[in-house]
Image (cartoon, one colour):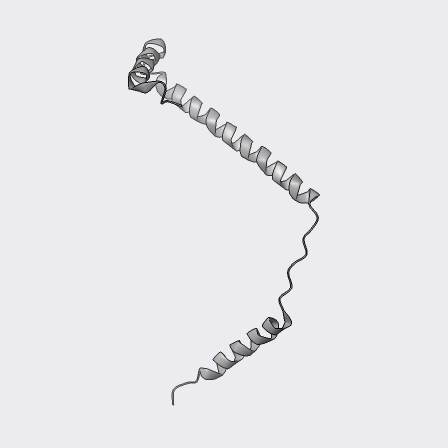
Length: 90
């Protein structure tokens, strides 16, 4: 965005802003611009979040994938064998 303006153009804009608003008003203007951008960004996120929520509600629920029976049985057996291997020292 600022690529077309260049450094001399930015310097000219800063000098013009100083002449128009004075050095005391520039920090207030900067804060106001920052708040405006923040509110815009928050509003955009809120709108996009509502669109995402509406899209999720309109989609049918996807069934959960079921793990094979072999994997369900093998997991508890593996945890039991590791518990048996942990013995107190004699």
